[in-house]
Figure 1 (cartoon, rainbow, N blue to C red):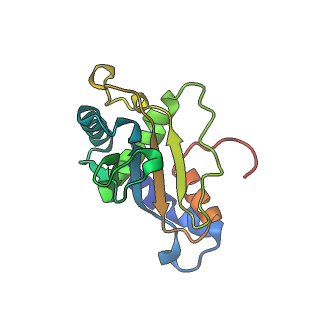
Figure 2: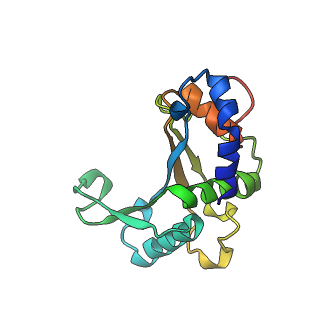
Figure 3: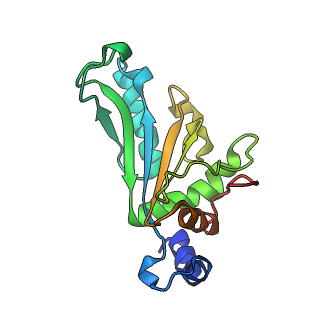
Length: 181
């Protein structure tokens, strides 16, 4: 079983007490993690799109998919059917493994890292944040990438509120910035 899942199971009673939850089924949990890359800069370069897809697949440990434009938008020079991004949704064991690697290996490698911002919650307990480059993950080799790109990571929880989502992620080891919420 994943190390992070064991950690979550161990901290469930503490989380239940801190949040004042009576029903153990209402204790917040991680549901899924979505990693996405807006690749509009690479629309016309299929090799670069494939390289980004391969990189995200390596990071996630699961096959990433290319997102195709549904509509044409002249202002962005996007035509229907063009590749505009890459995404992968992780659940279960792979989600816990990725979260473990993210908080224990990748985030500490960010230059001048002071924690992830606290204001990335959406009002329903889900958390969004962006990373500037894919090189912070140890499994990505510098020689294999064609262009440095960032990514957006969304952590979807079963929490009802931002307070409960924050408590869950903080107890699971997410390094939030110090200071007020």
